[in-house]
Amino acid sequence: MMGFPSARREATRLCNELQDYAGKVLEMGRSDRRKVIFAAKMGLALAVVSLLLFWVDLFPELSQYAIWAILTVVVMFEFSIGATLIKGFNRGLGTIFAGAIAFGFAKLATLSGPWEKVVIVASIFIIGLVAAYLKLYPTMLPYEYGFRVFVMTYCILMVAGNRSRDYTEAIVTRLVLIAVGAGVCFLVNTCIYPIWAGDDLHRLVVRNFRDAAASLEGCVNGYLNCFEYPSRSRIVTYEAFDHDPLHTAYKSVLESTNREQTLLGFAIWEPPHGRYKVFNYPWRNYVKLSGALRHCVFMVMALHGCILSEIQAPPEQRWVFASELERVGVEGARVLRELGDKVEKMEKLSPLDILQDVHEAAQQLQKRIIDQKSQLLMSSSSSEKQQPKELEDSQKLCRGEDEDKRETVVDVDSSAKSEASAQLWSSFIAGATKVEEDELKKWGCHQSASALSLATFASLLIEFVARLQHVVRSFQELSDKANFKNP
Image 1: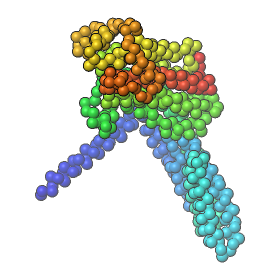
Image 2: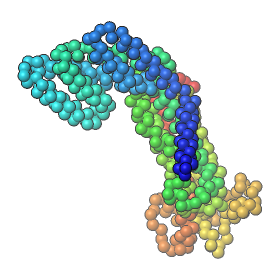
Image 3: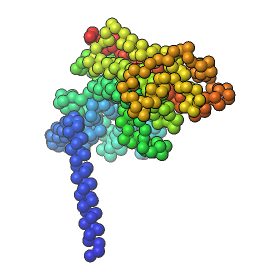
Image 4: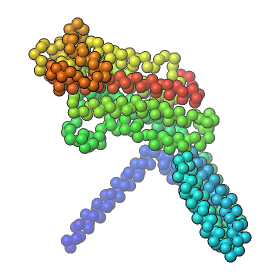
C-alpha cells in the first residue's frame, strides 16, 4: 500500500512530461509550417512507391528487389530540394559504380568454377578496404554517403547474384527500382511546395545582420546605463550568459558558420528558381558576406566583455562621452540594418556613401577622447587638485543632483590639460605596454586601470567601425555577381 502513492506520482510525472513533449511538437509545427508539409510529402512519396510495389508483385522476378524502391525514398527524401538532389547524386553514382564493378567481378567469379565463393569474398574485402580508405580523403567528404551506398550495393549484388545464379538480373533490376524511387522523390519534392536551401541561406544572412545590429546597440546602451549582473560569480561560471539577450544575439551570428556551410552545399545543387534566376548563382558570396559580418561581431563580443569585466570606469566618466559613444552605436547599427534590408530586398546600395555618418561619429569620438577630454580619463578621485567641471557635473548627475545637465556637459579647454596626463594618454594610444612607476603612483593604479577600461571600450567601438568597410565591400561584390536591382 505504501508504494501506491509513489507509483501514482510517477505516473503523473510521466503524463506531464508527455503533455509537455506534445505541446513542444505542436509548437514546432506552428512556428514553421514547412516541417508539417515536409512530413506530409514524405508520407505521400512512400504511398506512391507502395502502389508501384503492388504492381511489381505481378512480376515475380522483380518482387525480391522491390524493397529497394522504398529504401531509396527513405534515404533520399530530404527537407530541401538541394539536399535531395545531392543525396540522389551520391546514391546514383554509388549504385552505378557498384553495379559496373559487380558485373566485372561476377563474370570473373563464374569463370573461376569451384573458386567462385573465394573470388566473391576476396572482391568484397578489396572493395570495402578501398572505399573505406578513399572516403577518408578530405576532398571526398561530400561523397561520404556515396561510398556507403557503393559498398552496400556491391555486397548485396554479389550475394544476391550468387544465390539466384544470375548476376545480371540482380544488377539491372536493382538499378531500375532505385531509379523509380529516386524519380518519385524528385517529383514529389519539387512539384509540391518546394523547399529551397538557397532561401534558407538568404534568410539566415539577413537574420545575422539584424542580430548583429541589436547586439551592438544593446552593448552600447548597457555600458552607458552601467548595467551589472547581480552576482559576479555567475559570470565566472558562465551562468550569466544563459538568458542574456546580448549574448544570445551575437552568439547566433558566430555559431551560424556550420549551418551556412551546410546550406551552401545544398544550394549550389539547386537549379535557378524564384528570385535566383542566374545560373551558377553566387551562393558562396553569401557565406563570404556573413564571414565579413562575423569579423565585426567579434568586436561586439569584446564590447560585451567590457561590460562584464572586473575593472569598470565610474558612471560619471562614461556619461562624459555618452553622446559620442551612443552616436557611434546608433550609426553602426543603422548601417548593419540597412545592409540586411538590402540583402533581403536584393537591392544595390545607393550612390551615397553608406559609411559616411558612422565614420564621422567614430572620428568625433576619437577626437574628443584624445584631443579634448583625455584628462578626464586620468583624473583621480583621491587627488587634492580640483577636478574638471565636466567630471564634477557627471558626478552630480550620477548622484541625481543635476539630471538636466547630462546633455549640456561643456568641453574643458585643452590648455587646462596637465602635461603628465597628456603624456600618459599618448603612450597608451601608441600601444605602450609599460607606464612609468612615478606616473602610476601619481594617478593611482586602480584609477588608471578603470580609466583605461573606458578607453578600451571606445577603441573597440572604433575598431568595429573600421571593420564595417569589409562588410560593405563584400556586399557590393555579392550585389554585382547576383545582379541585384538598382534602388
